Length: 316
Image (tube, rainbow, N blue to C red; front, top):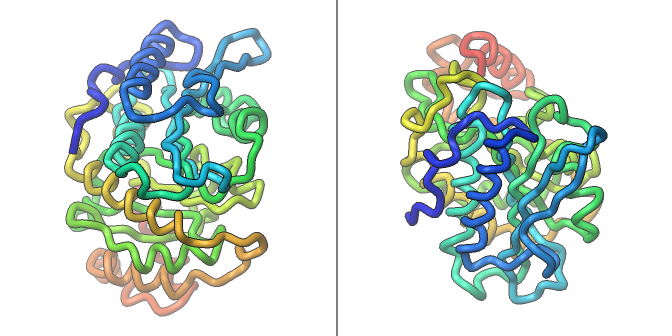
């Protein structure tokens, strides 16, 4: 897979408003401009806005055109700012790499819907879950059109720090629309990752999917969970699993193609995901759960207990 972004160039502490933040923004802007993407809304790739103190924040927005741009678009999003003091390789340079590589190799004419690539600003505190969070500003002030579905990525570059499930990727949000269940059941990841679906309520709104969830939009959130380098100076690029990131980018392509042809009618979020959650958890977490006396899982109550155990035991 082509390396569209040298992650090492952007792995530096880059809290919103800092000089390093502006420098990384320029690098990412150049990467978007070098790809076969179009400016968002035909106006540009850089979409600035300001916080209450006058600080300039900016989302980077690009479009992979579909054959029918009149259709509601799909969205791929990841944030680019960090908390102070961390180089932010896994949080969140790896996710940006996955997003760019996922769209880069989609051949023209493959999708009827356009894909909006959102590299969002201001995800970290003090903006987290507030009105100035980059994804929230995008949805409320910049998007101005219906959404087909959204995929959001955060903390997707590291091996899960549990022996036997290092290659796992967690997906929340399948419950946001029943059409996702058939999409996920029919899109098998290539070798390099395994996926597990879980309810968003287990972890809450950890990232930029928040605005899509609260507005009832179909969304999926991809993450490998917390690890020992989260928000630490040790979140550096040599710790990333490039093979895992490549496999995730390839899987995201499959999901985009499947969602492009799927319908997401309003009012289809109230359904029970237990069957698919059980299937994927037993298949991909079965051995580790059995080790701790939690398998095989047979009910939502079993899932609830096993998730609590994993989060308590391993801090995921």
